[in-house]
Amino acid sequence: MLIVQKYGGTSVGSLERIEAVANRVLESKKDGVDMVIVVSAMSGETNKLIDYANHFGSNPDEREMDMLLSSGERVTSALLAIALKQKGHDAVSLSGNQAGILTDDLHTKARIQHIDRKRVEGELKKGKIVVVAGFQGVTNNGQITTLGRGGSDLSAVALAGALEADICEIYTDVDGVYTTDPRIVKKAKKLNKISYDEMLELASVGAKVLQTRSVEMAKKLNVNLVTRSSFNKNEGTLITKEENIMEKPIVSGIALDKNQAQVTLRKVIDKPGIAAEIFSTLAKKNINVDMIIQNVGHDGTTNLGFTIPENELEQTKEALKNIQPAEKIEYDDDIVKVSIVGVGMKSHSGVASMAFETLAKENINIEIISTSEIKISMVVASKYGELAVRALHKAYELDK
Ligand code: ADP
Ligand code: ASP
Ligand code: MG
Image (cartoon, rainbow, N blue to C red; front, top):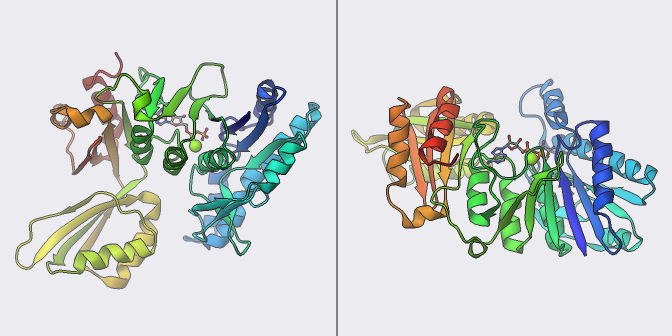
Protein backbone atom coordinates (compact mmCIF):
# COMPACT_ATOMS: atom_id res chain seq x y z
CA MET A 1 0.00 0.00 0.00
CA LEU A 2 1.13 3.52 -0.80
CA ILE A 3 -0.18 6.70 0.80
CA VAL A 4 0.58 10.22 -0.39
CA GLN A 5 -0.04 12.94 2.21
CA LYS A 6 0.28 16.66 1.59
CA TYR A 7 0.58 19.19 4.39
CA GLY A 8 -0.23 22.83 3.58
CA GLY A 9 1.32 26.05 4.83
CA THR A 10 -0.55 26.40 8.13
CA SER A 11 -0.03 22.72 8.90
CA VAL A 12 3.76 23.25 8.77
CA GLY A 13 3.60 26.88 9.90
CA SER A 14 5.94 26.54 12.90
CA LEU A 15 8.53 24.12 14.25
CA GLU A 16 5.91 22.76 16.67
CA ARG A 17 3.57 22.18 13.77
CA ILE A 18 6.29 20.37 11.79
CA GLU A 19 6.84 18.16 14.82
CA ALA A 20 3.10 17.47 15.02
CA VAL A 21 3.13 16.55 11.33
CA ALA A 22 6.06 14.18 11.90
CA ASN A 23 4.04 12.45 14.65
CA ARG A 24 1.00 12.21 12.43
CA VAL A 25 3.05 10.74 9.57
CA LEU A 26 4.49 8.12 11.92
CA GLU A 27 0.98 7.20 13.10
CA SER A 28 0.01 6.44 9.51
CA LYS A 29 3.26 4.61 8.80
CA LYS A 30 2.39 1.01 9.41
CA ASP A 31 4.36 -2.00 8.28
CA GLY A 32 3.90 -2.59 4.59
CA VAL A 33 2.68 0.96 3.98
CA ASP A 34 4.91 3.18 1.87
CA MET A 35 4.59 6.89 2.47
CA VAL A 36 5.33 9.90 0.31
CA ILE A 37 4.83 13.25 2.04
CA VAL A 38 4.53 16.51 0.11
CA VAL A 39 4.96 19.77 2.00
CA SER A 40 4.23 23.43 1.36
CA ALA A 41 6.35 26.31 2.57
CA MET A 42 5.59 27.56 6.09
CA SER A 43 2.52 29.81 5.95
CA GLY A 44 3.31 33.35 4.87
CA GLU A 45 6.72 32.33 3.55
CA THR A 46 5.90 32.43 -0.18
CA ASN A 47 4.23 35.86 0.19
CA LYS A 48 7.24 37.13 2.09
CA LEU A 49 9.59 36.01 -0.68
CA ILE A 50 7.37 37.66 -3.31
CA ASP A 51 7.47 40.92 -1.32
CA TYR A 52 11.26 40.67 -1.13
CA ALA A 53 11.47 40.33 -4.91
CA ASN A 54 9.09 43.25 -5.51
CA HIS A 55 11.38 45.48 -3.48
CA PHE A 56 13.51 45.88 -6.59
CA GLY A 57 10.62 46.81 -8.92
CA SER A 58 7.47 45.25 -10.40
CA ASN A 59 7.47 42.19 -12.71
CA PRO A 60 10.70 40.57 -11.47
CA ASP A 61 12.43 38.03 -13.71
CA GLU A 62 10.38 34.83 -13.66
CA ARG A 63 13.24 32.37 -13.83
CA GLU A 64 14.73 33.96 -10.72
CA MET A 65 11.31 34.02 -9.04
CA ASP A 66 11.17 30.26 -9.37
CA MET A 67 14.63 29.87 -7.83
CA LEU A 68 13.49 32.09 -4.98
CA LEU A 69 10.01 30.68 -4.32
CA SER A 70 10.99 27.01 -4.59
CA SER A 71 13.30 27.52 -1.61
CA GLY A 72 10.37 27.83 0.82
CA GLU A 73 9.22 24.26 0.23
CA ARG A 74 12.76 22.92 0.41
CA VAL A 75 13.14 24.32 3.91
CA THR A 76 10.06 22.50 5.20
CA SER A 77 10.85 19.23 3.41
CA ALA A 78 14.31 19.10 4.97
CA LEU A 79 12.99 20.07 8.43
CA LEU A 80 10.32 17.37 8.30
CA ALA A 81 12.86 14.73 7.23
CA ILE A 82 15.15 15.82 10.08
CA ALA A 83 12.26 15.58 12.56
CA LEU A 84 11.28 12.11 11.31
CA LYS A 85 14.85 10.86 11.64
CA GLN A 86 15.16 12.24 15.15
CA LYS A 87 12.06 10.29 16.01
CA GLY A 88 13.77 7.14 14.83
CA HIS A 89 12.37 6.59 11.35
CA ASP A 90 14.53 6.80 8.27
CA ALA A 91 13.45 9.54 5.87
CA VAL A 92 14.82 11.53 2.98
CA SER A 93 13.83 14.94 1.65
CA LEU A 94 13.82 15.54 -2.09
CA SER A 95 13.43 18.73 -4.10
CA GLY A 96 10.94 18.60 -6.98
CA ASN A 97 13.92 18.16 -9.26
CA GLN A 98 15.28 15.19 -7.30
CA ALA A 99 11.79 13.67 -7.11
CA GLY A 100 11.68 13.57 -10.92
CA ILE A 101 8.91 16.11 -11.44
CA LEU A 102 9.45 17.28 -15.00
CA THR A 103 7.65 20.37 -16.26
CA ASP A 104 7.45 22.65 -19.27
CA ASP A 105 9.38 25.92 -19.13
CA LEU A 106 6.50 28.27 -18.27
CA HIS A 107 8.18 29.83 -15.26
CA THR A 108 5.92 30.62 -12.23
CA LYS A 109 3.04 28.52 -13.60
CA ALA A 110 4.70 25.51 -15.15
CA ARG A 111 2.76 22.40 -16.08
CA ILE A 112 3.87 18.94 -15.06
CA GLN A 113 4.67 16.88 -18.14
CA HIS A 114 6.06 13.70 -16.70
CA ILE A 115 7.12 12.14 -13.43
CA ASP A 116 10.19 9.96 -13.38
CA ARG A 117 9.39 7.54 -10.55
CA LYS A 118 12.84 5.96 -10.23
CA ARG A 119 14.30 8.03 -7.39
CA VAL A 120 11.20 8.06 -5.21
CA GLU A 121 10.62 4.34 -5.72
CA GLY A 122 14.25 3.60 -4.95
CA GLU A 123 14.06 5.49 -1.64
CA LEU A 124 10.78 3.79 -0.73
CA LYS A 125 12.39 0.39 -1.38
CA LYS A 126 15.07 1.29 1.15
CA GLY A 127 12.26 1.71 3.68
CA LYS A 128 12.47 5.48 3.87
CA ILE A 129 9.64 7.94 4.22
CA VAL A 130 10.06 10.22 1.22
CA VAL A 131 9.42 13.92 1.87
CA VAL A 132 9.02 15.91 -1.34
CA ALA A 133 9.18 19.70 -1.56
CA GLY A 134 5.87 20.70 -3.17
CA PHE A 135 5.11 23.41 -5.72
CA GLN A 136 8.16 22.79 -7.92
CA GLY A 137 9.69 20.87 -10.74
CA VAL A 138 12.45 21.03 -13.29
CA THR A 139 12.56 21.49 -17.06
CA ASN A 140 14.36 19.28 -19.55
CA ASN A 141 17.15 21.84 -19.46
CA GLY A 142 17.56 21.67 -15.71
CA GLN A 143 15.78 24.95 -14.94
CA ILE A 144 13.83 25.03 -11.69
CA THR A 145 10.13 25.88 -12.11
CA THR A 146 7.14 26.44 -9.82
CA LEU A 147 3.58 25.28 -10.42
CA GLY A 148 1.46 28.35 -9.62
CA ARG A 149 0.03 29.42 -6.26
CA GLY A 150 -1.30 26.54 -4.23
CA GLY A 151 0.80 24.23 -6.41
CA SER A 152 1.81 21.78 -3.67
CA ASP A 153 -1.65 20.25 -4.05
CA LEU A 154 -0.73 19.52 -7.65
CA SER A 155 2.63 18.01 -6.68
CA ALA A 156 0.83 15.63 -4.33
CA VAL A 157 -1.86 14.57 -6.80
CA ALA A 158 0.64 14.14 -9.63
CA LEU A 159 2.89 11.96 -7.45
CA ALA A 160 -0.12 9.95 -6.27
CA GLY A 161 -1.15 9.41 -9.88
CA ALA A 162 2.32 8.49 -11.11
CA LEU A 163 3.06 6.16 -8.19
CA GLU A 164 -0.45 4.67 -8.33
CA ALA A 165 -1.02 5.53 -4.68
CA ASP A 166 -4.04 4.04 -2.93
CA ILE A 167 -5.00 7.42 -1.56
CA CYS A 168 -3.90 11.06 -1.67
CA GLU A 169 -4.70 12.95 1.52
CA ILE A 170 -4.53 16.76 1.48
CA TYR A 171 -4.07 17.98 5.06
CA THR A 172 -5.05 21.59 5.65
CA ASP A 173 -6.45 23.96 8.29
CA VAL A 174 -10.15 23.16 7.79
CA ASP A 175 -11.95 19.82 8.10
CA GLY A 176 -12.55 19.42 4.38
CA VAL A 177 -14.51 21.03 1.58
CA TYR A 178 -17.38 23.14 2.89
CA THR A 179 -20.51 24.57 1.25
CA THR A 180 -18.58 27.83 1.25
CA ASP A 181 -15.47 29.29 2.89
CA PRO A 182 -16.08 28.65 6.63
CA ARG A 183 -14.17 31.85 7.36
CA ILE A 184 -16.94 33.83 5.63
CA VAL A 185 -19.99 31.85 6.69
CA LYS A 186 -19.80 30.33 10.17
CA LYS A 187 -22.72 28.00 9.41
CA ALA A 188 -21.06 26.54 6.32
CA LYS A 189 -21.38 22.75 6.28
CA LYS A 190 -18.67 20.22 5.54
CA LEU A 191 -19.44 18.02 2.54
CA ASN A 192 -18.73 14.29 2.97
CA LYS A 193 -18.31 13.83 -0.75
CA ILE A 194 -18.10 16.07 -3.78
CA SER A 195 -17.68 15.20 -7.46
CA TYR A 196 -14.49 16.03 -9.34
CA ASP A 197 -16.43 18.34 -11.65
CA GLU A 198 -18.04 20.34 -8.87
CA MET A 199 -14.73 20.61 -7.02
CA LEU A 200 -13.06 21.69 -10.23
CA GLU A 201 -15.58 24.49 -10.71
CA LEU A 202 -15.44 25.52 -7.04
CA ALA A 203 -11.65 25.63 -7.10
CA SER A 204 -11.54 27.57 -10.35
CA VAL A 205 -13.91 30.20 -8.97
CA GLY A 206 -11.98 30.80 -5.77
CA ALA A 207 -12.40 27.99 -3.22
CA LYS A 208 -8.69 27.78 -2.51
CA VAL A 209 -8.94 24.63 -0.36
CA LEU A 210 -7.70 22.76 -3.46
CA GLN A 211 -5.74 24.15 -6.37
CA THR A 212 -7.74 23.90 -9.62
CA ARG A 213 -5.11 22.07 -11.59
CA SER A 214 -4.71 19.48 -8.86
CA VAL A 215 -8.41 18.61 -9.14
CA GLU A 216 -8.12 18.49 -12.92
CA MET A 217 -5.29 16.01 -12.61
CA ALA A 218 -7.03 13.97 -9.91
CA LYS A 219 -9.99 13.57 -12.25
CA LYS A 220 -7.81 12.66 -15.20
CA LEU A 221 -5.75 10.10 -13.30
CA ASN A 222 -8.65 8.90 -11.15
CA VAL A 223 -6.80 9.69 -7.92
CA ASN A 224 -8.64 8.92 -4.69
CA LEU A 225 -8.48 12.40 -3.17
CA VAL A 226 -9.39 13.35 0.39
CA THR A 227 -9.05 16.74 2.11
CA ARG A 228 -8.98 16.84 5.87
CA SER A 229 -7.58 18.76 8.80
CA SER A 230 -4.09 18.24 10.19
CA PHE A 231 -5.32 19.73 13.49
CA ASN A 232 -7.84 17.01 14.38
CA LYS A 233 -8.90 13.48 13.47
CA ASN A 234 -12.27 14.37 11.90
CA GLU A 235 -13.17 12.63 8.70
CA GLY A 236 -12.61 14.83 5.68
CA THR A 237 -14.19 15.21 2.25
CA LEU A 238 -13.80 12.62 -0.50
CA ILE A 239 -13.49 14.02 -4.00
CA THR A 240 -14.76 11.33 -6.32
CA LYS A 241 -16.67 10.44 -9.50
CA GLU A 242 -20.19 11.81 -9.82
CA GLU A 243 -21.67 8.30 -9.99
CA ASN A 244 -20.29 7.54 -6.51
CA ILE A 245 -22.49 10.26 -5.02
CA MET A 246 -26.06 9.19 -4.32
CA GLU A 247 -27.58 12.46 -3.29
CA LYS A 248 -27.05 15.25 -5.76
CA PRO A 249 -27.85 18.66 -4.29
CA ILE A 250 -28.92 21.38 -6.71
CA VAL A 251 -26.29 23.69 -5.27
CA SER A 252 -23.22 22.18 -3.60
CA GLY A 253 -21.22 25.27 -2.85
CA ILE A 254 -20.59 28.98 -3.19
CA ALA A 255 -17.21 30.55 -3.77
CA LEU A 256 -15.72 34.00 -3.66
CA ASP A 257 -12.75 34.91 -5.83
CA LYS A 258 -11.08 38.10 -4.65
CA ASN A 259 -8.16 37.79 -7.06
CA GLN A 260 -10.08 39.38 -9.92
CA ALA A 261 -9.84 42.54 -11.98
CA GLN A 262 -12.03 43.87 -14.74
CA VAL A 263 -10.80 45.41 -17.97
CA THR A 264 -13.15 47.57 -20.04
CA LEU A 265 -12.22 48.63 -23.56
CA ARG A 266 -14.29 51.60 -24.72
CA LYS A 267 -14.91 52.29 -28.41
CA VAL A 268 -13.26 49.24 -29.89
CA ILE A 269 -13.49 49.28 -33.70
CA ASP A 270 -16.32 46.90 -34.59
CA LYS A 271 -14.79 44.78 -37.34
CA PRO A 272 -13.74 41.15 -37.72
CA GLY A 273 -10.39 40.21 -36.19
CA ILE A 274 -10.22 42.79 -33.40
CA ALA A 275 -11.34 40.48 -30.60
CA ALA A 276 -9.01 37.82 -31.98
CA GLU A 277 -6.09 40.24 -31.84
CA ILE A 278 -6.85 41.34 -28.28
CA PHE A 279 -7.31 37.88 -26.84
CA SER A 280 -4.48 36.23 -28.75
CA THR A 281 -2.15 38.96 -27.47
CA LEU A 282 -3.21 38.14 -23.92
CA ALA A 283 -3.06 34.39 -24.52
CA LYS A 284 0.54 34.70 -25.74
CA LYS A 285 1.40 36.23 -22.36
CA ASN A 286 -0.44 33.36 -20.65
CA ILE A 287 -2.96 35.71 -19.10
CA ASN A 288 -6.10 33.88 -18.05
CA VAL A 289 -9.05 35.78 -19.48
CA ASP A 290 -12.27 34.60 -17.89
CA MET A 291 -15.67 36.30 -18.26
CA ILE A 292 -16.13 38.29 -21.46
CA ILE A 293 -18.93 40.69 -22.44
CA GLN A 294 -19.33 42.68 -25.61
CA ASN A 295 -22.02 45.31 -26.01
CA VAL A 296 -24.16 45.75 -29.09
CA GLY A 297 -22.11 48.03 -31.33
CA HIS A 298 -23.13 51.34 -32.86
CA ASP A 299 -21.27 54.04 -34.83
CA GLY A 300 -18.81 51.34 -35.91
CA THR A 301 -17.50 50.81 -32.38
CA THR A 302 -18.36 48.65 -29.42
CA ASN A 303 -17.41 48.21 -25.75
CA LEU A 304 -15.64 45.05 -24.65
CA GLY A 305 -15.19 43.94 -21.05
CA PHE A 306 -13.48 40.96 -19.48
CA THR A 307 -12.03 39.72 -16.21
CA ILE A 308 -8.50 38.54 -15.43
CA PRO A 309 -6.71 37.46 -12.25
CA GLU A 310 -5.81 40.62 -10.33
CA ASN A 311 -2.19 39.53 -10.03
CA GLU A 312 -1.92 39.52 -13.84
CA LEU A 313 -3.10 43.14 -14.14
CA GLU A 314 0.33 44.69 -14.72
CA GLN A 315 1.14 42.17 -17.46
CA THR A 316 -2.25 42.84 -19.06
CA LYS A 317 -1.69 46.60 -19.09
CA GLU A 318 1.66 46.10 -20.72
CA ALA A 319 0.32 43.71 -23.35
CA LEU A 320 -2.58 45.99 -24.33
CA LYS A 321 -0.31 49.04 -24.48
CA ASN A 322 1.45 47.45 -27.42
CA ILE A 323 -1.68 47.00 -29.55
CA GLN A 324 -3.85 49.98 -28.47
CA PRO A 325 -7.13 48.30 -29.41
CA ALA A 326 -9.55 50.91 -28.05
CA GLU A 327 -10.03 54.63 -27.59
CA LYS A 328 -9.97 54.18 -23.83
CA ILE A 329 -9.09 51.29 -21.50
CA GLU A 330 -10.35 51.20 -17.92
CA TYR A 331 -8.98 48.89 -15.23
CA ASP A 332 -10.90 48.05 -12.06
CA ASP A 333 -9.37 45.81 -9.40
CA ASP A 334 -12.08 46.64 -6.89
CA ILE A 335 -14.29 43.77 -7.98
CA VAL A 336 -14.79 40.13 -6.94
CA LYS A 337 -16.47 37.11 -8.47
CA VAL A 338 -19.19 35.23 -6.59
CA SER A 339 -20.12 31.80 -7.97
CA ILE A 340 -22.67 29.10 -7.29
CA VAL A 341 -21.80 25.51 -8.21
CA GLY A 342 -23.88 22.33 -8.32
CA VAL A 343 -24.38 19.34 -10.64
CA GLY A 344 -28.10 19.38 -9.83
CA MET A 345 -28.42 22.65 -11.79
CA LYS A 346 -28.35 20.63 -14.98
CA SER A 347 -31.83 19.33 -14.30
CA HIS A 348 -33.40 22.22 -12.36
CA SER A 349 -34.68 25.57 -13.54
CA GLY A 350 -34.86 28.76 -11.51
CA VAL A 351 -31.42 28.41 -9.92
CA ALA A 352 -30.06 31.48 -11.72
CA SER A 353 -33.10 33.67 -11.18
CA MET A 354 -32.93 32.93 -7.46
CA ALA A 355 -29.33 34.17 -7.39
CA PHE A 356 -30.24 37.41 -9.14
CA GLU A 357 -33.25 37.99 -6.88
CA THR A 358 -31.16 37.35 -3.78
CA LEU A 359 -28.54 39.93 -4.77
CA ALA A 360 -31.23 42.40 -5.84
CA LYS A 361 -32.83 42.15 -2.39
CA GLU A 362 -29.47 43.11 -0.88
CA ASN A 363 -29.18 45.98 -3.37
CA ILE A 364 -26.05 44.50 -4.89
CA ASN A 365 -25.47 45.41 -8.52
CA ILE A 366 -24.22 42.62 -10.81
CA GLU A 367 -21.67 43.84 -13.35
CA ILE A 368 -21.04 40.67 -15.37
CA ILE A 369 -22.81 37.30 -15.40
CA SER A 370 -21.59 34.05 -16.89
CA THR A 371 -22.99 30.55 -16.66
CA SER A 372 -21.99 27.01 -17.48
CA GLU A 373 -23.88 23.76 -17.07
CA ILE A 374 -23.10 23.54 -13.36
CA LYS A 375 -22.05 27.09 -12.43
CA ILE A 376 -23.31 30.67 -12.26
CA SER A 377 -20.70 33.43 -11.77
CA MET A 378 -21.38 37.07 -11.03
CA VAL A 379 -18.99 40.01 -10.79
CA VAL A 380 -19.84 42.51 -8.05
CA ALA A 381 -18.02 45.35 -6.27
CA SER A 382 -15.47 44.06 -3.73
CA LYS A 383 -17.25 45.54 -0.74
CA TYR A 384 -20.33 43.38 -1.45
CA GLY A 385 -18.49 40.07 -1.99
CA GLU A 386 -18.88 38.54 1.47
CA LEU A 387 -22.40 39.86 1.89
CA ALA A 388 -23.35 38.24 -1.42
CA VAL A 389 -21.86 34.90 -0.34
CA ARG A 390 -23.75 34.96 2.97
CA ALA A 391 -27.05 35.92 1.33
CA LEU A 392 -26.73 33.21 -1.34
CA HIS A 393 -25.68 30.57 1.20
CA LYS A 394 -28.90 31.28 3.08
CA ALA A 395 -31.10 31.56 0.00
CA TYR A 396 -30.10 28.08 -1.23
CA GLU A 397 -30.53 26.73 2.32
CA LEU A 398 -26.97 25.42 2.47
CA ASP A 399 -26.84 25.94 6.24
CA LYS A 400 -29.76 23.54 6.79
P1 ADP B 1 -3.16 25.08 2.68
O1 ADP B 1 -2.18 26.09 3.15
O2 ADP B 1 -3.32 23.93 3.61
O3 ADP B 1 -2.95 24.68 1.26
P2 ADP B 1 -5.20 26.94 1.87
O4 ADP B 1 -5.17 28.21 2.63
O5 ADP B 1 -4.62 26.91 0.51
O6 ADP B 1 -4.58 25.79 2.78
O7 ADP B 1 -6.72 26.42 1.77
C1 ADP B 1 -7.50 26.25 2.92
C2 ADP B 1 -8.44 27.45 3.09
O8 ADP B 1 -9.36 27.48 2.02
C3 ADP B 1 -9.30 27.40 4.32
O9 ADP B 1 -8.64 27.92 5.44
C4 ADP B 1 -10.53 28.21 3.92
O10 ADP B 1 -10.51 29.52 4.47
C5 ADP B 1 -10.42 28.33 2.41
N1 ADP B 1 -11.64 27.91 1.71
C6 ADP B 1 -12.26 28.62 0.73
N2 ADP B 1 -13.34 28.00 0.30
C7 ADP B 1 -13.46 26.86 1.01
C8 ADP B 1 -14.41 25.78 1.01
N3 ADP B 1 -15.47 25.75 0.18
N4 ADP B 1 -14.20 24.76 1.87
C9 ADP B 1 -13.14 24.77 2.69
N5 ADP B 1 -12.22 25.76 2.74
C10 ADP B 1 -12.37 26.79 1.91
N1 ASP C 1 3.81 27.82 -1.07
C1 ASP C 1 3.05 27.93 -2.30
C2 ASP C 1 1.98 29.00 -2.18
O1 ASP C 1 1.86 29.62 -1.13
C3 ASP C 1 2.48 26.61 -2.74
C4 ASP C 1 1.50 25.98 -1.79
O2 ASP C 1 1.39 26.35 -0.63
O3 ASP C 1 0.81 25.05 -2.23
O4 ASP C 1 1.28 29.25 -3.11
MG1 MG D 1 -3.41 25.61 -0.60
